[in-house]
Length: 175
Image 1 (cartoon, rainbow, N blue to C red):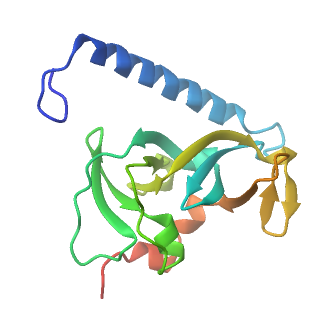
Image 2: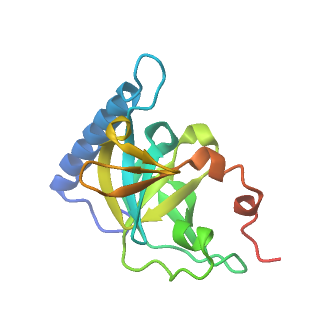
């Protein structure tokens, strides 16, 4: 078996893929169970992007994968980092901090990628610095448009569904 670098797969690669698949299936089950009986969002995925904590609705997230080598795309916005191959699918990688603030510094370090749910119909991923895991949004205190957890951390809600409807998001090319 060949991996993405062209090297033959080691026996532990198959075990690693099996564990990853089991983890993804468990995460999917937890995502489906994250809705309470009345449809209210109970748990969300906590992400760290450029020092800001974000809460993402689990139904809008796909996979969480290590950031692989990016292929730059010429004549695109600074927040469009390029393309990456994730399991044979080409995904556009977005730097959310730069998308929201043109003056934000470029993402540093490898980070992780959170892919958009296939239900959104966009082959995209967000580059994130940190994945905090599942958060109980219902147990947080609302402060304006944000939430505060019992430890005093402030979280901003993030809707990928709203993001993919923004006109500016849909136009990555420099005009």
